[in-house]
Length: 435
Image 1 (spheres, rainbow, N blue to C red):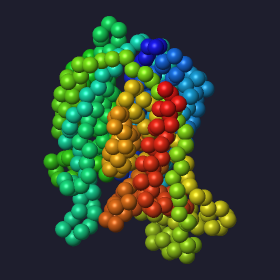
Image 2 (image 1 turned 180 degrees about the vertical axis):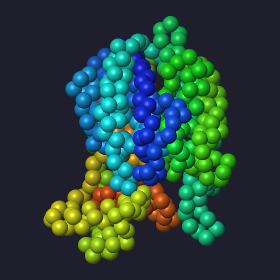
Image 3 (image 1 turned 90 degrees about the vertical axis):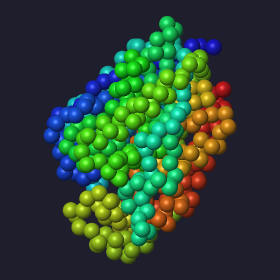
Image 4 (image 1 turned 135 degrees about the vertical axis):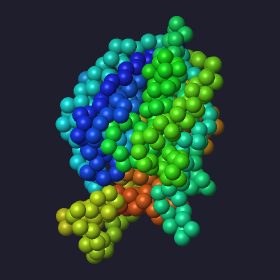
């Protein structure tokens, strides 16, 4: 069996002060750097198989931008796009690399001047640094996160804390040793929004930066965070919410995450050679017919052009429906999403260009008795929230964003079950082909 090789590189991608911080509203302008933003590249190869996983400490990466970067990587380094996973950690204290309507425009000076050049440099260095590795991993519980879909006494769903709702406490630490027995890299997988700081003015990786720095210090190895199904999960802050009132909250939550990650890391004592399996392709999710034209016009009229955040998303949704009718755009039965799979033995990473609800990730993992499936949110693009069917009846911010996602047609009923089924089928197909 060919040995599994891994090359790692970490690059600084901190912007100039004065950039728009993406995640709350388009007028939040940075005033200082609290901690450096990073892009960490993991290049895997075994025989003729190549895969790339990159953790980028930004909020989200626009799908079109992911396509451009992945295609550039494929053309330059001959790593197939379908095996290229680019994940945003979902900090809300980084430049706008998503450009979603209502949250401000893409920061192209940052993207073209810092982000893309540093990503390309990181991939080149990771390829150059590759060496044979064995892999170990540990799983433990962390209560950094909590469901943020608080249900008030008036039966209204708001952004807060709901200790009674679905939440996956599992944190997974994956560690890599070279032939000399030296740990050279770690990956932390956990699901939680990067909103501990709140609507702050500091550039920061948020709570996960504190966590990765500490595990890096303890292990002496490059460490990166890969966010899981965090669509309905936020940091469990002592203010009763899941968005902080200042930068101090990243340290309060970050040190809890650091304690947990280090504890899990210290349980790893079984490092072994593993097979690499990788692949990707499109998964289709069914769509309904678009809403009637008059209903779209009435919705559009409810909001003015200065709307922001979810109100602007509703206005834009109505506008896309109106334009679809006026242009004679045909309806479609489904919409595709690109999904990449990278498996190391029985440890399987699968990408989603959504902010996935935690229950969906849990259900996918439950479909496999012999594998640990780590779903990645904000990976290979940004297509909004993906909620569970039962969340619709409760409403709330994430539900609004799912229903008014920019598509001129809404997702079909039981879309979560369909996405789960097709993801499981996709993983099994790729694993069969790789055996």
